[in-house]
Length: 243
Image 1: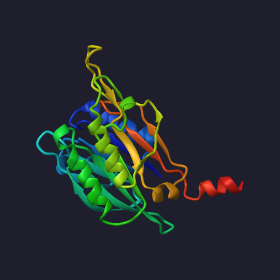
Image 2 (image 1 turned 135 degrees about the vertical axis):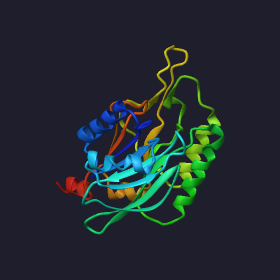
Image 3 (image 1 turned 180 degrees about the vertical axis):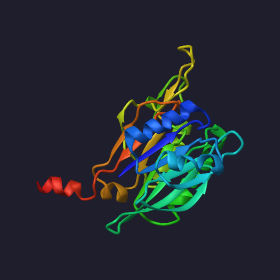
Image 4 (image 1 turned 60 degrees about the vertical axis):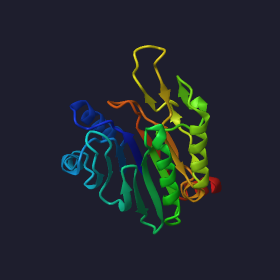
């Protein structure tokens, strides 16, 4: 299974749509999580047929900001459990009977509101116990090396690290460019790049998919790179060891 998460920074122009179609063509995701769609259900619904991913759940934007969408292909069994302006939480049922949890995250970009995202993770953790994959734009970094430009306050990073630790979520790392977001500033002094987008999971999910690979994809229309999670196959690790 392949899962893609992308902060698309709005789907209301042709370049954004071309970027989305290119991701669909190049990455061929089974599940696609979009943040900052800047659209309501009526406008985003048409993308079900454009992407050939007819299953869709939407959290409407608030004016000209925010908005989340979760698409999935025919034959993929996804049950959405909850959603807010910060997340869409779902359970994925495998053909062999196994099930696991998928949460698409969009962290609040405002420093004074970031704690709301961390509290949300704590609430989600306590709702039910399953292998758990959480991915998206957290709008925060874990370590100073994940930012180029003005340094991030240590307290902000520490609160993010504590939130993940409290939830038993561990970062997967990545292949590709470390920086998933850039601000396109024209001067060297103002240019900033950060690793805001990532995938994290608990031990149970990592054991379920031991061959997972996370790729920071090529930039498209948005100032965020898409995040591609290739799950590999369950049991593939054991097969390799036996061989």
